[in-house]
Figure 1: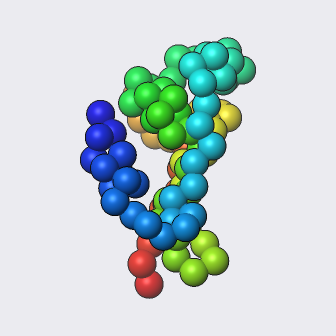
Figure 2: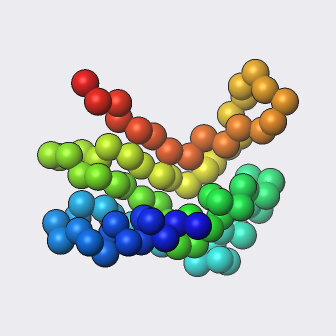
Figure 3: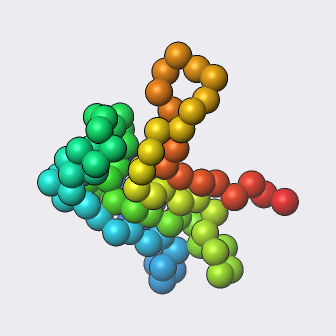
Amino acid sequence: MFDWLSEEIGSINTNKFHVFKRLDRQAVKGLEKDVGSRLPDSYREFLSAFGQATLYRDGDGYLVGVYLFTEMLEVKSDAPFFGFGYEVAPV
């Protein structure tokens, strides 16, 4: 599912352009137990492959981040909403 990202990571020679803190499958299951819900399959796969991630270094910061989901967010929707990342919008 994330082959494109793996290929991109392999092609970059810049130190700490992407930083990962991988989680094993047991840690992902523990996270689900802590929040009391099964996480979306794509997020589970991302955590197992890459874990917490900061992507696309820009100076002293990063443009995209994926962190560990800790709680379901309330939004006006019939579907649950999992908040687990950020993106810095270009100025």
